[in-house]
Length: 287
Image (cartoon, rainbow, N blue to C red):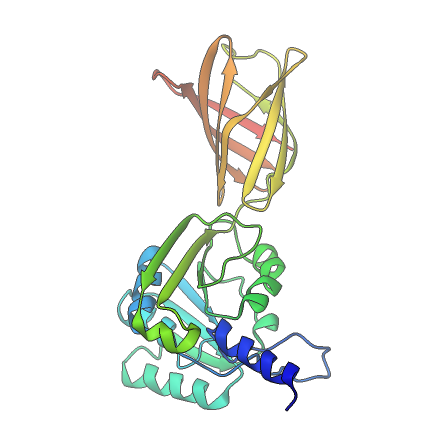
């Protein structure tokens, strides 16, 4: 083996988490392994699911599920349902057997499948412990197939361009054998609604008797914009989009107003109130 091959192999081992995951190929080609399988430490599994507030109402999908411990824990400890996919037949068989022995086979299922071709639309929570390049190859799939509000948990490697909702760092000796350090990172993301574009908002008459134009710009989880009122543009302040939940502050009539609302397709509905307190009133918008 030449020097470059040795170096490439060393880098792959150092990057961990080194799951068996497929790389997308043409339909006539089988997926290939992205690296040797190393399981997530059990304590990290519980921490991930706790961070995402997983419960009986959730459907968890684990991409690159290995021996199934994430979905098994979600089902047995947190009461959730879900499935895992992996391309290693032995690990999938082991995971299904564990589900049977633990009495959760009706809520935790594992299949041999290419994670890039897996239908993830049913998920309320997606978990990943994958190589960084694989994580980022999944970005478009996650954004396009998951419903707004779906939580995404990524172990060790972030989704570039996404702002995490929460972030946790742990020190675990189990990780030294994987990456050479004990540091373990968990990123929690929430899939945003698609809010970018021009909206026509109707505010309480005390704020504006005419429809207000909202122009919103969105970069995945980041959102900004301005309102056109009386021929003037007023920037939205502290604009935030979390799933379908949209909030911002707007200076009108010499006061600051707090807007909150829900984005559903081409419509928004919510309430507005004086930042200093007072009665809430309804507002709405359409694209």
